[in-house]
Length: 136
Image 1 (cartoon, rainbow, N blue to C red):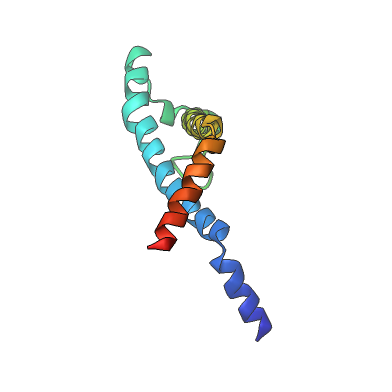
Image 2: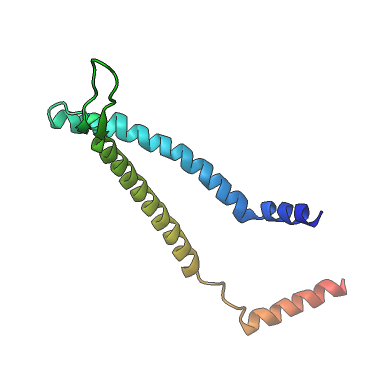
């Protein structure tokens, strides 16, 4: 019974929930980045390189035997790797900018000065006000 209670406390911590939300959003963001690279960035690059489709680039190590279908093609698909590297770079830039933004917000919060302590006159006036309020 105590294991269930410990597990419930573990899950109820804010950090675990935040992590779960981050993983879910990260997975969705991965789909957006993949679409951005495959459908927005790579087609113009392919156009600039003479209609080359990077996702189809491969180094064939052993061609398939089309006559007998006994031998499958073996190829190094370096075009897909190039797309994945570009996706990684986009995610890295976005994460860098996000961390930079959070650090700037934290820095501004840390730089905000605490309110000044009341002057002796203000303390005296506060005491007088409180005494007058009690005497009524």
